[in-house]
Image (cartoon, rainbow, N blue to C red):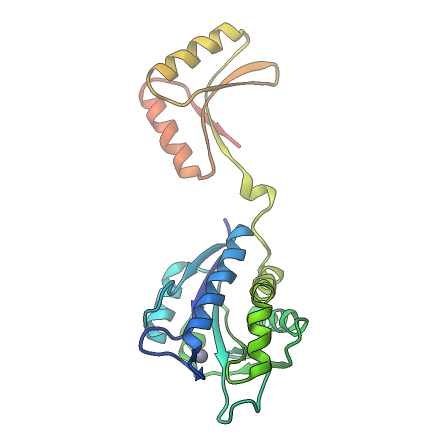
Length: 254
Ligand code: ZN
């Protein structure tokens, strides 16, 4: 099964998060979260977003959503701010405690981001943050630079795609990408195998006549009639059940 990751864009709706000269954290968070998710999807990781537009959900709701999602990891995207603008800069990643997979994930993300020119402020324990405390899977909160720092914003804007890549690759380096042979496996539904091509053709026509998908494959010295190839086993099973209920001898192979 593909790895599944919840990507959480911090804040949203009436909760803008930090802001600086009209720039709102919630917007940066959402843009970056969506880009990270896009890269993960391309790497065959199943992505669930806590939000994909400008809405507010409480941190508790986000944690419950994550816990119900069956995800392997929870990654929250934020930007940092300090009391006095332009006095602090750099990236950091927050964890409930500095142990296990989340500690490794946090370091992988930080070191990738640091390569882009951000100061690395390290991994910081924050045991009271709801999204880190209430989530049941390893969870991190990435502070992707200070929104009240001109240099960090310049990096954020100019290297936006690379920042998304750095976070996504930090995730993939920790739990692995999904695009291996196993993920591309297709479940093929076979309806018959014949020594004679004509017999296979006859079944092919019969199946097509009833509206089923049908193909002939020559394998292991025989003509096999296949009625569909499916990425999802459930779908192959449904097709097999339809065919066998009509009296065909079917079997599924990969
Ligand atoms: Zn925030």
